[in-house]
Image (cartoon, rainbow, N blue to C red):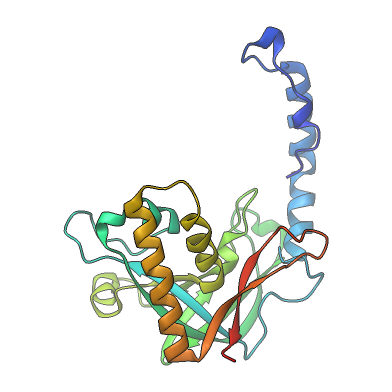
Length: 238
């Protein structure tokens, strides 16, 4: 969705009343161009790499899911990184799995099925377990491609309680992204308990991936023209 010009909308007399005519005009323009811009972005895979698929057949991916065993909060099948960071009293744990990409499909986007199969969906495996990424239907927010990095276990309808009991974590996220969030938040103005938990999780992740997968997380500059932007990638141990 294009927001070009929105920053030009000002308040009248210092109050919180937006320039309504200007805003209405911009809204109509954005709504008119939204679908075109949305699917143009989808076709670029949200990864700034042209037409290259975000995952390749045979590629192996490390993913992480968080869980807790506390009776202080209801257990959930999905735990966001924000929830993990905000609730150190739940003493969070994690599971890391290695996924192998086995299938690629062109899939429709939820609510825009009439546009055809415009997005990329994937099937992955971890041992005998099957996971889906944006498959069989892709889902995007107006300003978010977060689902591109989410991997959900596939299982028969009606077996959710059994799956939770057996596997604990049913939904994983790309390790490099979650690791970046954890590392960045250590250096923010957080309560001591939050910082302590984040540091613990980072240390435990570093130890586990080194021991199990012989890899480590390394800082990476994804954009040469923005050296201040840092993320993390998985690299072999030296």
